[in-house]
Length: 449
Image (cartoon, rainbow, N blue to C red; front, side, top):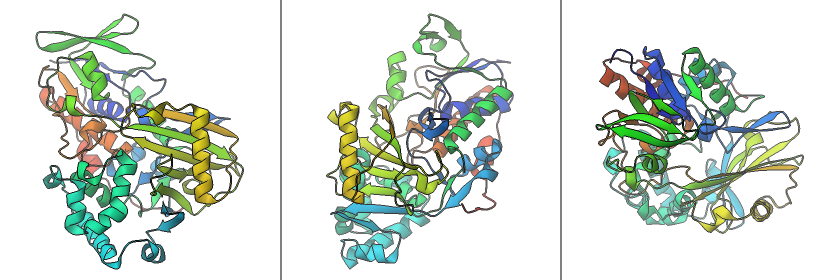
């Protein structure tokens, strides 16, 4: 095949990175099909009074090399500023900063269990490959290095906040990888006077346009047409058909299997998705500028976490505004809370805010986002599906269901796209250096905000 055509289903960051890597390796005739109005997927934004805000909390990690590589690629990395912000655990009516000696000592956990926690964190920090834990649970991991007391006091709460599951049903590999990234204690990045995810998505759109990639937005795929063990066309909602020699699916596995219910690739039909509710609002009231991330660890509130977006990025929105993000993770979109009316949902979140901060929040606008398929539920025994379809010779997979055990982030989505592009190029007899370049990327400096 001298000039194969490639159709990429999904214009999230995985799909965009796949398209870009293919184009940079010399592939042409690439089409990205996205049902939304913009590229970016879960990294999307919304506009309010001329300012852009993330659909939900996002931050730049200094160890996320793939993300930093692409920010550099679009020319945005020099604008990134770094801040150390607090992550708190709100438990029993009190907030604890486990990143400070005083907060850690005050947390309701025995000295023995605190020593176990430190031992676990040291183990996670020094271990990079967690594949030997993929068949073991988070409960086994915590009990092995920290003890059951540490698990019951802290980690049982965290896995329920994330997946509505106990530690015994959550992957030990996932928890270990998450602790390795030290997301709650490392400096976090932002771009002043901007919503950085919009900067990233706009930059990726520009890279694709410059590379000659065709991007079709607001376009739905209703069926994939097959013959002879291959996919030949994507049928669109308009009735139009887009032909291709190679097809890459970066959409959720549930959606893909509706298009091709006969695909028997291992693990695809086992993946279940969590759901996310994210409410972003703005107020003129001053809110604690020292704290960014508050886990509601008592497990008796509607929100799982409250993010003070303006604490990380003081320039987000209008001058003087405080921007607050309420987040709830649900085991699935069938949970009753996912369907609660906006007014009732907001009343519950306002009650959560008062319980944490001790005063009534008075937002002057709110934006409610409900994501029915947010992240794969990384249960014990989770496996990434193969990168190539076992049923169709020319179908490849990429997306956040192939990033296990890494945390699901903008960087892992981009990295998955580079990996999928590498597999396609290998089969075409081509190669790309982008994945290696991203893996080797180093941050030169961390200018403070």
